[in-house]
Image (cartoon, rainbow, N blue to C red; front, side, top):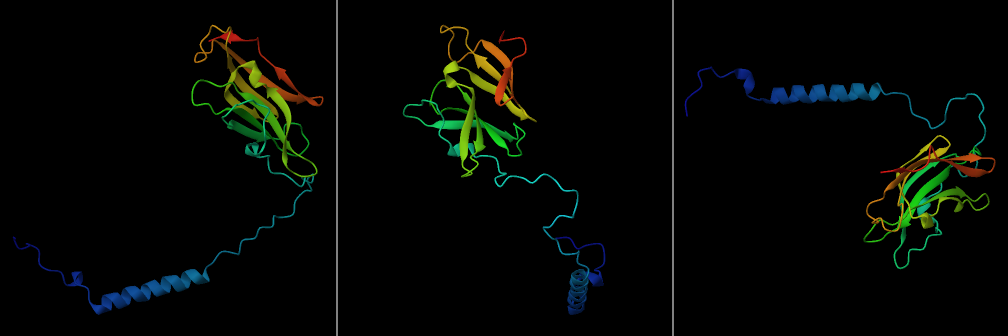
Length: 192
């Protein structure tokens, strides 16, 4: 090994005074930081304008706790997609669930269901079927925007079309109106 051309520097060797200086500086920083603490946080909100009181059950219904009207034989029904919003303007959120049978093969049809909480027990319950699995369609591009539920439905023009390859596509929207969900479709189904 070749010796270094630079002379040894005296301050590169640690001595007890270096450790004592570092420890003193560290103690000073910790002591100073304990004196300069922010105010304690509180969970209370500042007083403001009065708002409409929320119902006792404000959490959206859990779609995995409901039995759906879908025939799945030996397999289970599964929630494929879900979204929550106050769709009917009553102050309580509803949950919209896209459900199908958990089959190991093929493309099972979807059902779209609306859930709310029971007023007395607070348990989730099914209140509307927006799309019945008997319609033999699947759902893509599902979303809830404000008080509207939107989806793209994929379907089949005949029984001769393979179930892997839907040949019909339509965009739909459901909105709460006069005590029921009303479906609207822009210009009908179109081929894929």
